[in-house]
Every structure is written in C-alpha cells, then in structure tokens.
Image 1 (tube, helix red, strand yellow):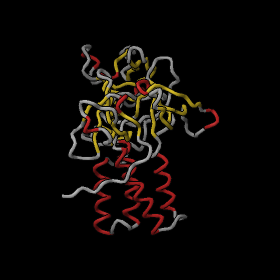
Image 2 (cartoon, one colour; image 1 turned 90 degrees about the horizontal axis):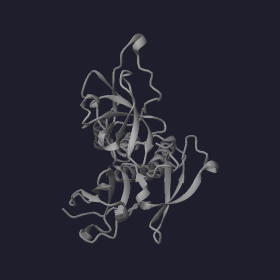
Image 3 (cartoon, helix red, strand yellow; image 1 turned 120 degrees about the horizontal axis):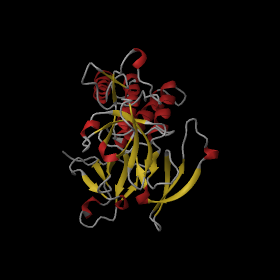
Image 4 (cartoon, one colour; image 1 turned 135 degrees about the vertical axis):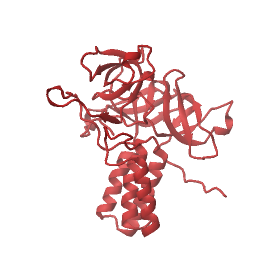
Length: 309
C-alpha cells in the first residue's frame, strides 16, 4: 500500500519505516535479541541499519542490519492488563501470505493466500470464469498476490477480471468499480530510496531515463494522495529499492544473455550482494540473482505467450 507502508514477502526486510514496521530479529551474534519483536524505524542508508525499539521494554533500542530483520506478518498475543503493549502503529489488515501456524498468534487478515487461491479456483469450477463470484474472488486474490510478492500474477488476474466484469456486468456495475479500485492498487510501481539523507517514504516509479541509467520517481506518496505536494525526482537505478513483487524485465546481461527480455517479479533484495532475486513468469526459467542495473521496471505487461504442452 502507499503512504509509507510497504507490503513485502516474509523473508525480505527492507520496509519503509514510516510509520514504524513490526519486525523480528534473526541470526544475530547478540543471540539474546533473536526472536525479539519490535518496531523498525530510522533507516540509515550508509550503514544499512534500522533502529529497532523492542516490545520488551527491558531491552534497549538497537541499530540492526536489515538482513537480520524479518517483517512480522503475525503478532503474538501480548501481556494483558497494565502490561499490555503500547504499539506506535496500527498493523495492516489486508496482507498476509500465510495463515497462522499457532493458536497463540494473530494473523493480520481474515485468511491467507492459499485460502483465497482455493476460493477463486472453486468459484471458477462451479460457476465459470465469467460469473460474479469468480470475478469478485479474482479481485480479492489479486490483492493477496500483490502482498505476497507476485505482482505479475496480480496484475494479469485483475486485468482479466476487470475485462470480464465490464463485458458481463457493464462499466457502471459495482463489481467493475471494485476491480478498477484493485487495479489502482496493483498497477503503481512502488519504491523507496536507499541513500542516507534522501527523502524517506514511498515513491512511485513513473519512468526511466536510459542515458543516465536513472528512474523518474514521484513522491513521497501519502494517503490520502496529495499530488500537488509530491516531488518528481531523477534517481540512479542503484539508489532505488523496489518493493517485493515489482514486475521487471531483464536487459544488458552478458553471462546470462538468454534472460534478456524475460519478465518476472523482483521479489527479494539481498543487502549484501545488492542484487534482486527475480522469479520469472516463464516457469521453465530458474530464479536468478540480478543486479539492479540489469533490470528495468515493467510498466505495461506484454501479452502473455501461450506455450505448447
């Protein structure tokens, strides 16, 4: 979502810390902090660390590398009564790519990705892809795909659902409006800026300038949107951090030239190698770790090729 809240895959930890994002510490040499829950704020681009304020007030705030943090998609039950936690943010209510694995935890949403995939496929089998239940479930599933880092699938699904709704229900039907609303969430290419001292918050990538290897971005984007207060900036490609699931196309690769022109989702950014893990739409291709300079944000999706069995 826009407005400073970043929806990313569970294992990626590069959230926009405005407002604070719930995180869990992992793989720290200071072992007593591993598994501790807190709020990630104040990202320092030079050290690639967040300042983390822990739920356990006996622990002092700590500056922790982003590779040692995981976004907490599930919040354990806190203490009751006077010891109840005082969180400084409201957890998101839309995104969860997994259902709870423990009766002691609370999931942000009313169901996980697997549940909504099952509902969608069942509605297609029982009522047909042009039915109202199938179109409605497709719009819901699109949101869950997006928040699970599967942006390409999300946009293709909602594009198809919107097309069907317009054709079957009409352009002024509530279901058509619902699909259009979801598309407005799925289509923007969101990012944050890495260097310390740069404007913080969520930005929209609106173009690319090849001569300078830069992206044109607009923001910070807040909700409700105030475009008249947003700035348009030209930023080097390496200084942009794409949110998980951003559709990209490969270019300029030499050792893996067969991937040039292939599209996929940039699902995870490795803070050590500074590469994105790209999952390709062509399932015959293996996941690849690719430098930002060899990727371009894909603004419009090409028609999906039908492969022979």
